[in-house]
Length: 339
Image (cartoon, rainbow, N blue to C red; front, side):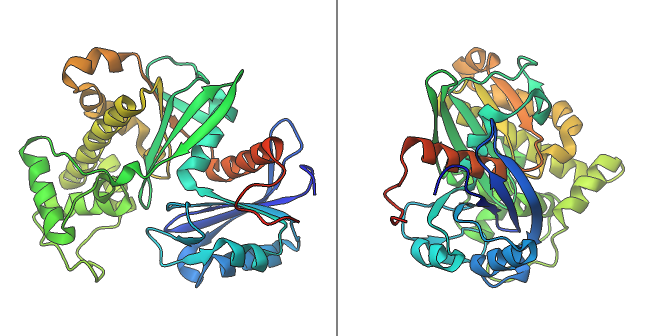
């Protein structure tokens, strides 16, 4: 089995499961037969993958699966979806010789050095994409992903997968303290992911409109759909929707600035499926003010570039790039069985 062998790549989040077939032997991996599946329609990752492979009629001999959860152990459990699997069982069910499992934002970070100028939008800082580390990669989707990219083109790149989205939320001002109290009544501990996610935006909206929080273990029918909140905010006449989205952007600025300080980042790349929908709104929000609101280190953050990834499938491309990097560094990894 060589680098030219076809590969299954997947990006598995709490809401969607994305699949593609990848060729790894070009200058950059190429993706074919991309398909987006609703995770709720499948009982497990194995079932979703088998459905995809049957639809494309191919039998790849290697796979890279990016999942929205920690990936240190043999047993993998998604954070925001009731899916679990063991590496060995998944490898057997897919009938592949090589299986790489990585964190979804680890995959997004692998994508960054391969991005063209048109694959990201400059929000603040230099208008040109600089491929140099350290680079923080974070973003809200079903949850809040965070990863660190270090290195450069000359010496090579390394991705550090993290669970930085689960850092405790630090409210600023009376409004955010009210939101934190509302969240605490619902969840107990309040992490950044509780706010910076799709359901987080819906809960910010509910908290600001003084709706009572529902029970943790049951769906809350009082919550508006996140997409509806964004649409109403951008349309301009829904004051509460604009207030919720503005608060979401401010909190994202705070967390992005904190992440840049922790990582010593030169660039912050914002990924995920939510933010690209409202880039102009984000630019006029308090994001920048809160990003720089770090006391004596405001000037330090002035030089940090902030960009938004708009590539249509960064998780899939990142999974393919990670798999190729593993091929080039070592023909077999410790978590893999010999072919």
